[in-house]
Length: 369
Image (cartoon, rainbow, N blue to C red; front, side):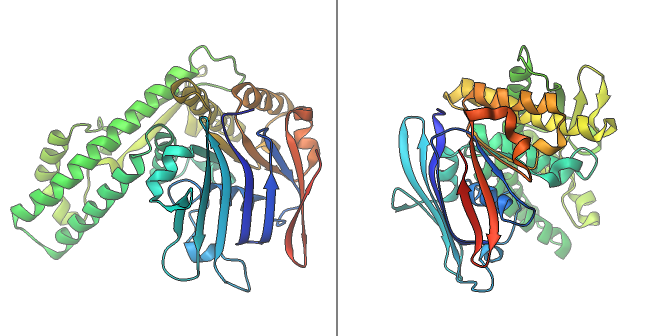
């Protein structure tokens, strides 16, 4: 049994789920059913138990079950490193979503300290060939699993950057105003860069010597125009000050962590991830998530909760079996979805199986094993 797992999950008026209760014993969970039955909605609900906007990045109000639109609630019994917590996040239909841990109101960052959750979803299939924003978000999700304060620094940096961009667009020229805002950006930005670089180092170390059939990825963090990332507050503050004339002309900040990109190389072939086949790109992503789990298991004694949406269908039978073996060896509670139960046959009794159907009341779950 994993030492980081959800033993009871309850969804109320969340997406297609009017009321769904899932009880687990710590094993991985394979959820299968027709498209549109509500499989991904379960994974999305779990992702809302971590900091941020969840795996779909949906607006809070969009998660309410239609047509009622009464708001929604997700609650879970979480077993985390020898402790049990009751977590609840809810939206009443107005305002912002609330979060409570053990019946006490808590900020989002508190979720990151007890619930380490990472995911792969189909929209990430083009991660290596589309814009840098998705790659930064993927790396930041991995970084958050190691450093729960990473999200807090990211939000602080983005708030300060938005203010600086407003000043640039308005033609503000007072250096004192810029210095104050740039100091905030530099302080948070340096932590972001250090966390990202540390995450890459940990992932790389976890790949070395690992017994896996998934390809290793050589990751490299790059700044604007393929520059080295600026990872100290003093250097970043200086760079921002020097960039003001150029930034004012552009009307936005042209340097900083928000301009980073992650380059990935398929190590054994020496091929950039963007040039790999679709299957190889998927295998690289799976490899990085497994490496993240191995690194966390070494650091804190438990692998993260892993959410894998429709991943099995895109792997050949050998790699699919290898994925399940690695998940079980790590003791990770992975929540996986697929259209057919046969996709999870290699798990045997090492995983729970849940069939999901859609009826007039919404999504309905039936335990199989």
